[in-house]
Image 1 (cartoon, rainbow, N blue to C red):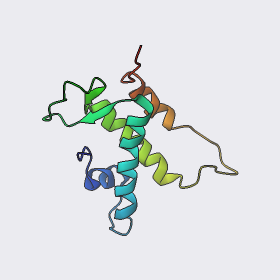
Image 2 (image 1 turned 135 degrees about the vertical axis):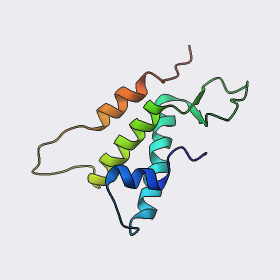
Image 3 (image 1 turned 90 degrees about the horizontal axis):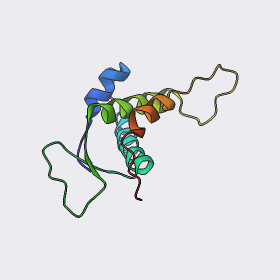
Length: 108
């Protein structure tokens, strides 16, 4: 998969100034764009990359896709467990869903 978001961009967004979690951050980047492709049934392509004619569900990367990935990565970074006990919960991934759902590919 092409590099749509760099580790440095994510670290800047998360306000991380150390290198100890670089492997985790790189993994979260890959997982976020995989989540986009899985949840929208789309195949991502870089802006300068041609989408093959036989790939009907191809889409070029956009700011809303990147912003949704940044938000999802931030949520995963801050909430390393799937359940948080004793806290007030807010659902940041819903914002990601809102940014991404308009890109959903539905084959009729």
